[in-house]
Image (cartoon, rainbow, N blue to C red; front, side):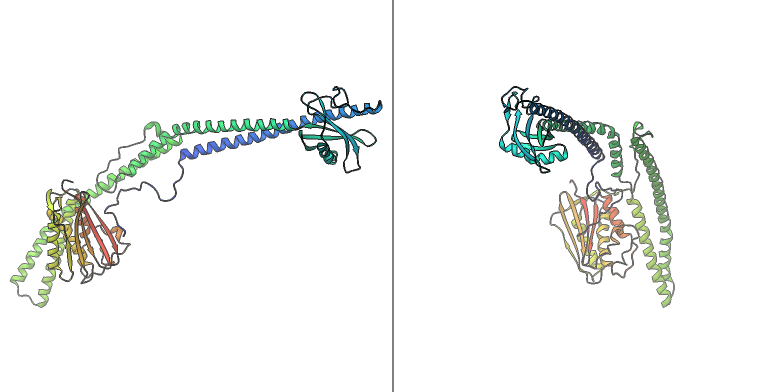
Length: 506
């Protein structure tokens, strides 16, 4: 069941439908953090690559110097007496002569498929020269061909990862020299961890500091948004409305983004306030015109009805003349009713009933139903009211007109035999009067304007009796004058008007 509020003028939704988007402050902070993250990542990658290249170049230079020393030592040994190398000899012996973890191996080349190694030694961190295990010796033999082809090759040994080079000595003899790369990788790892920690700290500082700075910068814009929201919640559709709020001068000076927005909002509010004043003057003039015209029309209408009655009583009228007089009387009565309705609407524009008595809505509903049953016997009317009084404050004549107009509307716009039901109940400090009919329903396109003045529902509901289009407007005006509301729910076979009024003392 869909309902239409009795008045939607001046209302503004608090939230727009659809997915909620991130605020400007959140977006700016996120963009700032992402930008700093990208910069830190780029600097970290550049620093890592630069230092890696530098360390690789230094290691290659050290490796080439170590290989030159090893080749020179082997050539000197070939020129002198041949002795078995002493692994535990002094640094000036056949082992590596500088640098801990440096290894040296001697062997022979086998064509283009690498070669074989006779022995290999390395110097530990205490300066002692040790023989390389046989498994590591085979690993070295496996990379000799690659080392000769590429100039240097990595190899994984029990000592760690090494980079080795192969140098020829003479008559097919070769010397393999290697230096460890674990320290290089450890240095790069420490650098990466340092950069990561520094980047995380930079992101944290950027996020916190940026959020504080952006919050402070956008605080005037939040004030502008609050002012716009307050104005949006102000009912501007009717009545005298004054928009007092304005953006302060310090936040509405052109030259900055916030200043431009504040100045634009102030100009908009000035324009809206001026338009409201023009609208109010126009409405006041229209009300005065309707009131004056209605008062002026009362006298000639009364005269027309008097002369009509006098013609009926004093003149000998034929059949055509009698019909004309009857028609004149009906139309003058209808015109009088229209004038009275317009006068009532003009008085109700003040939004306050002239009388504030305690009224039992149950009694009013029963009396209106009795009148409706007598006036329209072709529409069965059922009524349900509580046993205890349902008391509201207001004008009993106007409240009676509410029920009478709703019953008349249901009778006029539904086929003969349509059931009408009137219900009254009280809950949560309010009285709810419901008038329900089982007619064909109201055209959905007409529902939003059904309470507007001079709206005719004849095109949407089957009815043969003409109306002025003011009945439901009067109902809404009376309900709002009594601080109440009227809602409508309509579908084929069920149309419900619900009037809600505050209970007396509620």
